[in-house]
Length: 109
Length: 119
Image (cartoon, rainbow over all chains, first blue to last red; front, side, top):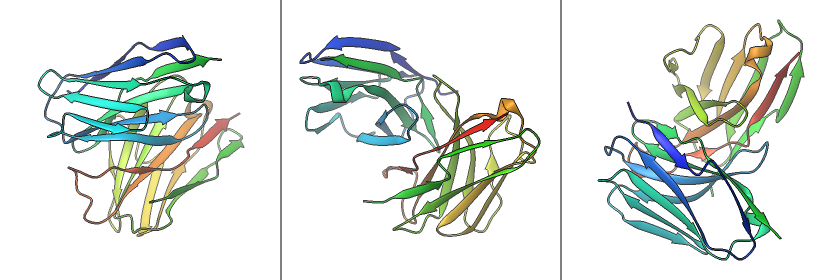
């Protein structure tokens, strides 16, 4: 059974810091891995999608890596801003998406 | 980009009533739609998968008679919570996938969610 874990569960950092969010999954037989952002009471915003054959994807200040063999992905956020405050979810795709429990990020001004 | 619209965004109703949530794909034909439930500070859990014109496939532990899913057209799926009780209060999110967007390499498009509160 696929399980997805995110560490840390919560993170509070001062503005400007670079930070890393971690996602681990137990079964490496995935099609892709996707990182999402969720603001309180809102739906999901897709940030980055990494295919199983890819190692990383970049979009602006965000960089996501995937090591399928070890069951790990990281989301790197450069020069964090207060507007980055949200919950970040990773999800692995088999025949369905299985979501991690998320990391609640707070960036302090 | 692809847009998925969910309505209503928030609903409060009395225990025992039925509530219908709509999920529409606005600029593509959604052959497959997914319904998720999210409890506070928890992750999203898939409830069911529906393909246009056929019966939904429910995940283990989800009562199909309580959570009725209809996917009668390529742009609309509905989730009806029947005889709702306070424990059904949750955040419900739909997601849609178009034709040709197979399992492997396409992102799913998510609605903004519906917050359901049962008094």
